[in-house]
Figure 1 (cartoon, helix red, strand yellow):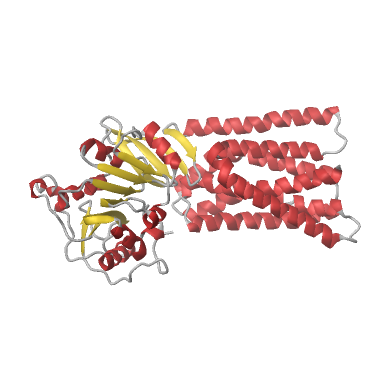
Figure 2: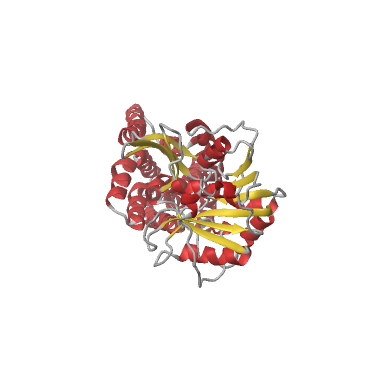
Length: 485
């Protein structure tokens, strides 16, 4: 029975350690983002914590191979896990507000908030080896078995958390579950339980639950502007109120990025660049069908459906939770017969679709954190193939026109020129060319079919065309993509 309890503990602690790693990425993402650099930092810090845990756990196990000591360590792990929601508010949030060094913030927060419980969970395996085989005769076999069991637990924890627990329960509920599982394991492992121990553990459970509840209350008190905090399979999503001047906006935030926002009084789109998508109506007077890759809060599709009553729009949005929030928070009418939604990866859709469109809008780029698979020559060829004869691709790009931040537009302009016989470029705001801003890139499949009657309607947009732009960058391909994630 004792060996079975030990095996269960090793397996679950291995699983919970990996769950904590995924939780760490979600908790930190609204403050430092989720780029490869941040993921690398989180994984590195967690591995360092686990390495220290293995080493120190082995030393303590050699000196005092007592299962009650192991039980105590697991309980301490539960305590530090229950503190995660509180530390998000009192450490992570303030640190992100006083420093712009995202990697530095990620290192500190990963080490303090998640490194400590991860370090404690790693101590379980060397303790288990010592307690399982103190004779040293089969130490290799015992060590291999424990390591294998812990690794299997890590695999199960990774897939279960990533595919099921996080998107269906959210990280806050998951933190509570981890806390309770560790508490139960600690209680289960302790030998010679008496009334005094049971009473102490009961009060400890109350404290653990109190920490979790207080973390929730503290978060809500310190973030009164957050209307919804949702975990999906892909992201942590916030819906927020924000007052800009005298205007109250409702905002959809993914990681640190502002995805969509609307004026709460008028329900008008807040992002100026979205109005440039209307140029399809000028450059192709017969345009009837549109595909949009990247839905987010569906602010433009909603605008499109309200303003172009004779046209249809298909939206490809990989995250179904995003669509649910667009419906509940931003007024999306999913029952509109002129709207069709595909919950699918944008590149995958372009690769497989047999549909033909007059316009394809790409709004899936978040600054330099672009899904590279939508930036390449091959992706644009697929988009071009999905266009009708006078069709066009209109893409929003965040970049500077010149200077140290001009790589994105230079690479994409070169790639568009390689695919489309005619390309136009617009700047959304009248700012210096060295400043990062929204740029609109349009590729025409076979030229234009201009609606001269609407030149006046779109004159302000058309006046911001950048002429004479050129690029010395290489064409971006699936095998050469120096931009994006």
